[in-house]
Image 1 (cartoon, rainbow, N blue to C red):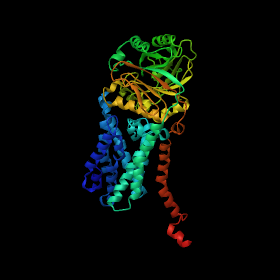
Image 2 (image 1 turned 120 degrees about the vertical axis):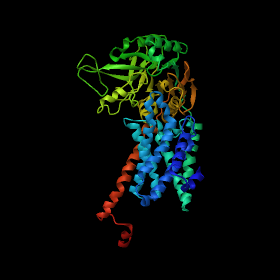
Image 3 (image 1 turned 30 degrees about the horizontal axis):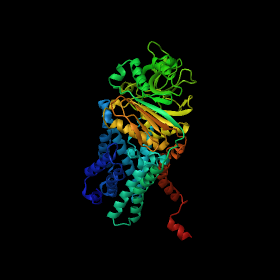
Image 4 (image 1 turned 30 degrees about the vertical axis):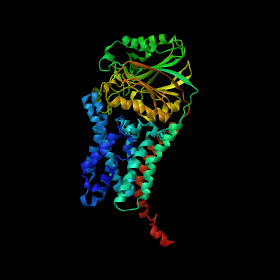
Length: 556
């Protein structure tokens, strides 16, 4: 492959797009080899550089760059996220939409090189623009951080232990910077320039981070002074049929029967999946809901026990008050309510604060949050039904952890899509959690890459936070993950199973937990400097405040 790129002028644009697209696809988990990511962008980068050199001869080539990079990124996104269409056929637009965003930012990288100046070193702006893309794609209404390039090592945690310092953003920086230096090295070889310095930097970028990570991996030892006994439930209820056709009482009976087979006097938590409690309760009356009453009664026999479980709830709003998520109560003019996807912490009936609720904060676009709903209200009717309540949901306005007053354990419950976002999860750890629970319902994607990728992303959260992750999924895969990303136990897919294990509470805060996604923030500031520095220097020279270097020497 390297030889193919060295003799690059022989290749057509479609061939370059095919190379990068297939390399990206072949690198992605759960079946790829992630070290290919360190080379996957190189064909596109060298091709763009050739286009830039020919700009004066052939005019503006931006549309060509967008089109062929779109082909490359579509191969990647479609091959690795096609499973979104399992929920609804028109969701197949998601991979192509993501590919178009990637192609747009790659085209912006080309524009930036033109703006800054046609220099080989401006190839180093590629990592900067890609980091900006991922930062935006994580935070806006149509967020999809699933394909952030740093996630590519999710199934090889031994190679990215340093994420505890940088988060996934550090992985993206490493991958894109390595690609840029490989491209610089190949370009310099082709032009018979001094390339040894690029070879040296590239060598260090390729080998130093994995080597450092492996040393960290082999030497890491978690604090084992505070054990906690956890039971995970995987009821395996088909979300398209069985889960929401069974009565709430039947589902609760299944959960209690599974728990009875595993729980003992030393058990601290039972963790059940997202939306597994079926009553669709009003929050002001939630203590009188049948499933809650049964769990409270069950817990009376176990002095340490708390449950973490998911539910869809409704909340009455004050008279006349509306919100983005508000819905009418039929037959009234001024009464509204909102709905939420929540995690519940359920203790004992006589326990202080025996029921706590936290609402999902990071909502799934088009499923739990309709972008532009404020401006185009009819979009609400297009929400994808992936189980639970559909349409725009209400969220918490702050980070909430659960505190087990029986044992003093502080935990956080990540609800499904939230486990994909490192910047959100580290806020729970910063608030004080000692263990990460993840509750999800991945059954609507069937036996595809979807649920496997979702499980693997939790391995990165374990490393970033240095916390045990206890993941309860309705249809699989449920698992225990160690703070170094190793999977300790896991269930089979589409099987009714439970897991029991002793994990260890962790109290330390990693550098990433303390400082967050600083790499993405730095990329934003560097972009501002890169965009505005050239015109500023030109203006200063124009005003005579900054003389060219040769004139300064003569004046001296």
